[in-house]
Structures are given as C-alpha cells and as structure tokens.
Length: 315
Image (tube, rainbow, N blue to C red; front, side, top):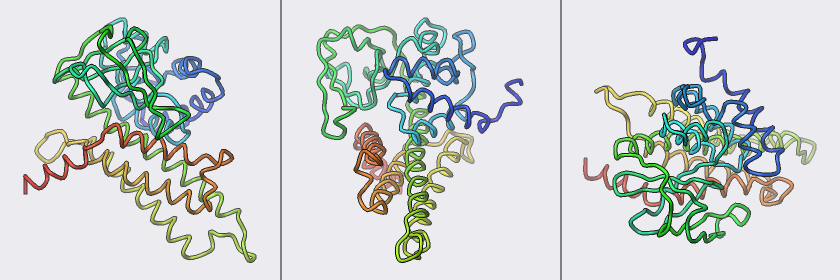
C-alpha cells in the first residue's frame, strides 16, 4: 500500500495493539522498543531516518490510543522530536527507539531550570530564548522530583547549568513544533477522556440497583450524554485546527488544547463520580487519567489566561 492510499484511521487498531503490548513491558525503554518495532515512534520521522514520513493527521490516532490506554511514556513528544531533528543521528535514534525524548514546557536555558511534566526521558527539549535546545538529561547536575500531582510518575525539575546540548531548533522550527504538539497533546487528553467514558458506560450498564442497571436512570443518561458531547466537541475542534482558515492561514492550536483539557478533566472527574468514587482505587485507576490531564494543564500553565487576554484585546 502506498502513502497515497493510507488513511489516518488505518493506524487506529495497530496503535492500540502496539501500545497494549508495550504496557506489558517492565521498563520504559522496553516499552519504547515495542512501539518502535511497530513503527509508532517514527510515524512522522523522515524515511531516511527510519521513519514513515507521514503527516500529523496519522499521528492523531496514535496520540488518542496512548491517552485512552494511559501509556506512561511521552510518546507524542517523542514522535514530534523524531521529525523535528530530521536528517540527524538523533532523529534516527528516536525513530529506532534507542532513546526516549520529551519536551519541557516550563523553564528555559536562560533560567537554568526546566520542568519535565511528561517523562521519563533521556533527552529533553528545552526553550532557549525564541528557539529550543535538546539536552541530555543524564549529563546535567541535578534532577528533583515534584510528586504533588502524581506520586507514581512525578514531574521533574531539571538543573540546566551543566546540561549537555545535543542539538538545536531555530525559532521557526520551535514555533511549528509547539503548534503541532498542542494538537497532538489535545488528542492525547481526549483519548484519556475516551477511556474514562468507556469504562463508565460499561460499569453503569453492569451495575444493577432496584432491578435495573444504573444506565437506565434518566439522570445517569444525561450525564453520559453530556460527557459524550464534550468529547465530540473536542474531536471537532482538533480536526478543525488541522485545517487552514478562510484566509489560508494556519489556525492557532492553543484554544483547542485549552478547551480539550477542560473537557477531558470534566469527563474524567464525572466518570469518577459515577463510579461512586471507586475511580480513586487501584482496581479502577481513573485517577491516573485525571493526573495525566492535570499535569498537561500544569505544563501549559497560564495559556488560558493569555488566550482570554488576546481575545479581549482583539475585540
């Protein structure tokens, strides 16, 4: 099958199968190796780097599956960096799964500190002025866990004073990568909400009270309908943001990410509510999905305020 015959939906089942297989592995690098063998890490990487050379639309179902199945790896960031550093040995290593890469959305080279919200990682892309630098996380002089949001997979504060810079992206490349990351991370959050909604629908159909399943109650159906509506809104917003506007310009991805995070948080919190709080137990760990979305919100802290200010200024 040629690239012209491929459709993004063709990767949905393959991504789900590969991620499910990866989750059986005991280490992050073993998981990444499984994903690389399935072609997921190099979905957008150049063919000369060992990738498939496909556009962002083909990475969306992968991001969605990673969120829905709660993959504890920065797969979205890894995919984007394998493409962004095309033509280098770094891209080839990322596409092959030899290293794990992520992006620190808070902090910078100038401040000497950066926070990694989605790890683990060997390499981290950090803002450097209007550009960005890829650093070796193991060559720095300090990593401090921040476990308030997620004790099992804590955020990491990185000290960058002695960081080893492996490669750089210029301002244009950094801006393009950021926009693409916002769309893929929005799909990741939407996938996390999808997983919670599916688990909730299954539970409510099986849970019987007074001779009827909970899903037969009108109030419960209203909640489920609201949750599904918000998911559909997020999906439509992501697909719309992929297309150029009526003037032929690229759309701003920030409102899409901000709205999707809010919708996903509502859906997951409502899922925990409808489970009677059982979503905070290890038997039904919906809290993991909520933590992932809240960490994503923290990674882009202040974005919603900036979007609102820009809208008011333009009115």
